[in-house]
Image (cartoon, rainbow over all chains, first blue to last red):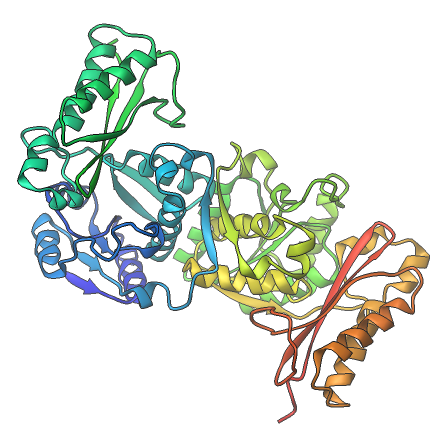
Length: 285
Length: 285
């Protein structure tokens, strides 16, 4: 496995790979790699000839008062996990290598960032869109792997690639869960044992919403929202933020349910803010 | 010369060229090609193995009340000029081909668009930055040719390419002028014979500013601004907008002059709004 820390190194390595005729995969991460990332990397390594992982805690996507400085960082552990999962290249640039000057040009996401995470974290998705555009521009033509866990991010990246005609194919990676349903996330590291025991409430809420739609054939969105929120509220340590039923492509909140929808929840558990999501209503034909 | 109208066609043609080992040049234009564009294309054709010209009147960079619908369009004439100048490929997409859906993701230019044209044309440079990012993403690694005539645009494109790590080298093309000094511009077509006679005032103003700095060693910017404005005002048909002395890289207005500066003027002549610029203070060593 090759470790690159300069943008030009990454570009040259992937140019070389393409010249050999390789298909190139790219999985942008903020490090603190866990089993979810490992599954994504393994998928990418199985599907692409050259599998590159980027590790960069992007300051642009953290707001004031957010956890940029305390975000878990452990490059050594990340490198072993990436290698074990099948990465051929890891790109781990310094902040100075990525932003030698204060960036004056950014990528702006409008409507798609209005709700959900975007509403709670102003500027977050512009920061994500800017760094993703930059990483994809550096990498060149590639299959770009993004986790479904950050669903709004996935929707935004898909649209970004389309609107800016970036030469990438976005590949969605299914969420990996603990046996009790908690979605793997680097921010789970913030959970005390008590909070960790309460955390599966998010997935339980999503399952309750999905059952309402898929089994009870609920066709109004509000009762589904209420049901998901009620499940979150059953856990005293969970402070629900949102419990939404949206269009899976535009993320617009729905009134009526017909066809596939995306259920999304967010909650605070102590200092951790967790999110999760699930498809429902896709129908069995 | 090959005419492409679909984005994927352009991408495929240039991928093919690169596979042959060609260097690729790209000159984005809004059509209405004139001698200035021809000189740019000829320079590109001399410097690159494959020379591609894009012709697209980009709606995103026109404000309400601006001349989007009346902007001169003549594809047949453009194609002959491009071919004569040495273009190998012309990419002339429809609006629908470039923006099949309302674009939700855009490229935003901050500080660099605060003054000069950006101040008079809110949103203009975000529209330029968005379409340039898209064209460069479609084209892939290339030498990207931009005229110095649109100097603020050139500065913004340079920074855009840097900040977003686009795989392009920006090449500046010197302004081409009529014998009386008027910079060639598609918008000169809006000038009546009287206005056309008054139009060289912009270049005269720049030359007066340059003389003040280079010959009289003026080191204060304000007297230079006043002198340029006075020259513009000598022509009754010219309504001066700005006459600026700025840092050539950041475009910040200067107080003192030391080293190279950029002089920029803008004026309205009837319904035409013309701009021009010139370097001064670069010294002869």
